[in-house]
Image (cartoon, rainbow, N blue to C red; front, side, top):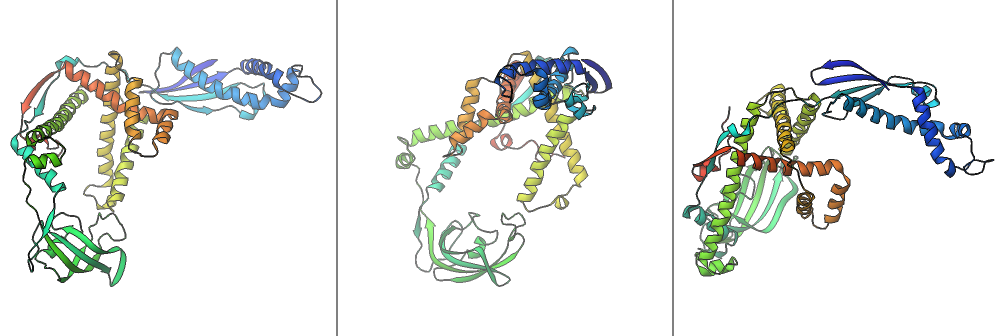
Length: 448
């Protein structure tokens, strides 16, 4: 095998590789000899077919298999001999006449293009200092959660005769909607219970029923929002004929032991304790998320090195597809956004570069510290994922077991969290008490 480096620019390398025809012929003879006992050719006993006859009958087919194997093996060997690590699968371009090579007697010549993994040193992790926001769980948060629980169990009782519907009341209605005088799919309902102020219906619909009484008939005019899920209705003006058949008011909920028992707890004290523990767990998750974000910011700032263009391109395409899908779900186009497409692409390419850089840094930290994802951890994640598809658990499980790429995607966030937890134990983390609102504020909100 002859290897000549023909290009070296940044992380990109290109090699011209030549495999002599004699080497290919040797491999062909060995392969044909290994199958001669299984070949049946007219006029010859099994195992007695001359190699030349086998070449005529099967030579091109077997040579094709040998060439494919040789391309991959030679490319890998060329990298290993030079201690090079490929960032992505190398590209291979055969430059010799393939028919001549298949026929035997001609060298196999091909080019290999490959992007390399960058070489860099991980910073001294123990020098990192970050703040971790934490919030205490007070009575206000517990009572707020209890109120939400009560709302999900809320009952209603009929208002007195002739009473007008108020905010938070439940009205029972029949309705029929039209656009440009024509009925449309989903625009009709009977005996529909609607809590005024719940936001269950189209914006503006519920507000026009405040003050309605049993037996009232109202004409309600609304405009479907631009991001309405049914694109045919988005931005359309509609008129609804609505008849009110009942008005009910929410029954006051008393937080006592009986309420706690309805929630499956022994008494109110036990319920409050359970609610407090759940809120604290949620707060702890948010605190960790902030700490992780701060840590990743520090790692991103401290490591500057060339990135494999192919990895950045692939990450950008994945992000861009998500952007386009999100726009489609909201019935919007790129032209509707405040920034130009070029500005958006620049922004998301920057995000892609950050993700690739951090992915490489975290991978190196994990490698240096022998951090890996166990089969048990993968199994738990796969079981949890499969339970999200009732009745299809087996199919999901088999898909991931048979698909290396899908299993890698399942492994990636587990590995990242293990590395992040490892680093958080090493660095200087100072807890900073904040309010609940401060804790739950997205650090990107209001960012320029």
